[in-house]
Length: 306
Image (cartoon, rainbow, N blue to C red):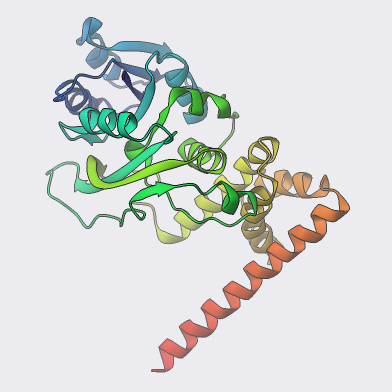
């Protein structure tokens, strides 16, 4: 079982060496470590050069996360692709644990695992997110019906069999948060396994795109990522999942909240192209979002009175 580690990097030279060292210093060696540098302007490329043939380096102009991640995966030649962000770290037994799991559970097309949060500067542990329920998961039926029954962890806790991952490539240009697209698409198309053991550490620092952003920005980034993913998920045959994800930004936009940029126009274009039957179903998803938001507001008011 050959495990490729796929990384993308953009101006994270200050963290890159430690990330690479964590991938190289494994109890079972990775088949290869593929790093795509997405047009960095810091010292990232000097760091990559210093590793010589220990890693596979691909240098590109700045094209964004989706293109960089697609390039990294397509340059992998292993049976399994494990993702690693350039500001994160792998525990020494990550590759060994993934090999064991994929060999033990042949039906698992993806394996996700626990993820610890650390202060990236001091390495001090921080409060970490809860892992999904461990064990075998076949969420295809739920996702087909538009019900999100599994929330997957962040990028550095993700891995797939290469044959599963290539079904959803290339990641369409313009997708916000490309790892979310990979998670939704592959969970909707194939069964997998969740390990509770944390096999990676996510570095938390001031320049995290999502983790350290203000709550309002995180919500809007999430909605924008849904808008960009919807057409691609639709084309993969996950129509009701696409409708479910589109309902949240649609309701917010209809409530007068601007999604920013071209997101509102893209959402209107997609919903306008739905058949009459799908528009009716989409309206049901939107009504569910409105009802959920109403319940949340009511709970908030009741809590404030106590």
